[in-house]
Length: 207
Image 1 (cartoon, helix red, strand yellow):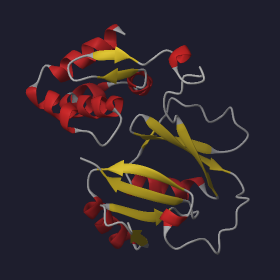
Image 2: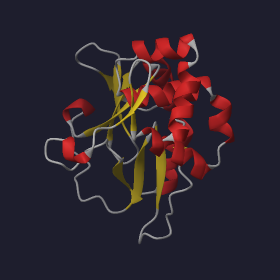
Image 3: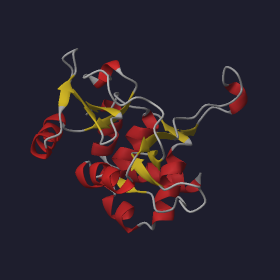
């Protein structure tokens, strides 16, 4: 926890860092902390080796940030049933062609591949992509679900939700790429689309 404490001190030492943590009520405190750490110390993130970057992200999932200090998550035996749920680790998505999927997730959306995750130990091709401190696991496997007849609006289908900063920017990217999308029916800033394999995705805007 010494490294986590040092990271917290780096963020909390600035007025802007403290304000960001106070104001960011739209996501889990540990995610707010990691986002603020990444904003205030980009040079540290960029110079990290992949395994070090993974360690930092995983370390952030083990802490919660209060107004002025960093504290450990409650112990497993303090949770309702004792298993100690921490967060969603990753979402697995099936794809027919890994390269085509990477063009969407990596090139279009800008997600970063987690090179520290081995892919040669599994009996199928795949890639792990960072989404904040969690991941998407693309798996090149046959899809048992029907691809036709699914709802046009991804919000009425099972879907993965990704928090972003600018929905309008993503709309422009989708328009330029010719990717169809729908907007949130509730009027909030959110956009729904499907990847090349029909997996429904929601992108919701957060501060």
